[in-house]
Length: 267
Length: 256
Image 1 (tube, rainbow over the protein chains, first blue to last red):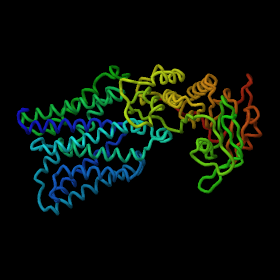
Image 2: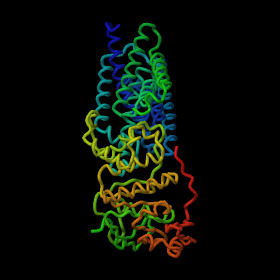
Image 3: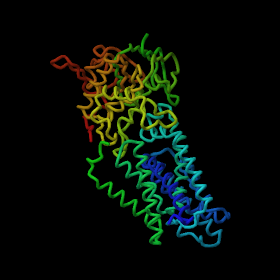
Image 4: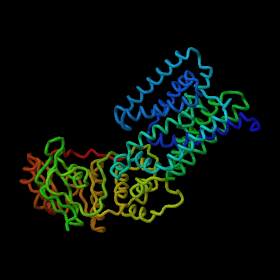
């Protein structure tokens, strides 16, 4: 299977996406910003239709619109503030509306609408893999730089602020990074299935351990396992990769939830 | 040199004077409670001393490094980060960069702070799973781990049930004596703290009044401060009990 260049590209892109999604997703789950993550995935739709209209590669539209969506949500208010969930909902609606407008201006049907929604691993180009590698490097550098104050601000915003952590700047920058990770993930799993890689591995890892470095490593391991497994199954069965990644993720999360609590509660 | 000093200090918020003519001197190693009705400016006093809010007049001085525990609610039960990691954030949580997971240069200080608050049995569990009293102990350890000379706590007893209020008050008393730490604690209800206090500061009606508990905590002084009938009783074993403080309701705090 790996003799084919298109499968090599798929595995390379899938691995980079697993890395991005698992680490960003762990912080997203910890910060309880899954609603923001979901809305950012919706921004892939205006991203893709806008890019089609402008004649640009679809992936660039994903990244630009998802990152802009992150900025818009950050402008809507502090994390956990009452008006924030309303702001997120409005950004989502505006994103859909804009995407619909772009689509009608484009005057046609997006040929890849189904893969936009449910993901695809066919036809990933070398350029796409390099773009993903660049995004992954930037996002990892971000977490290496601010991981510790971001953790502080995520679990204990009030105390972190009194200790000099720039919580507002971290909130904004994290939402932009989340947008980039969502935009990358949507290219493999599709817009509707980003949570298969963004939430399930992180949530399963958090259930297994309360040790931060170990949880991040486990989240990555789970995300890689379901991505590689999903790609392999999709290759041999000729069924959509999004289905397999989401199903494997869900099954694994369920299995971990069913483990007796005593087997990991204090680790 | 006094640990905390206010000289003719005054503070305003939104153009309105919160309190004025405040004079206060706290010696190093004293356990002090800041009391008074809601909205009278107790937390404001801490903010002035922390330098978060300027004094309009006079002087406000704090000698030494301050560990600060702001008023807060408890951690969400889904927070899957170990108590010991929460304590560590008190040392290096604001620093950029990521520590190497297999090396912890602060392990000794963290263990010491956890021992001091009696949190060893549960420090390696996820903070969200712990009771309110256990979380409060770990937060005190987090404030102490930077080895400050002063500890400011804003309503640390508020979310606790009565046994935990008594236990945390006794714990703070012990740390205060062992470390010669100056503690300034904002509270609604003076009763759980009374056996431990060296000094009380009342913030009420635009005034700040301080003194030794037996001098300030009298029926006349408190009724005057609160502008409401407050009674101070002495139990058969000589302890003081304050009855009728406004804003103090029957205890309905709970642990989970």
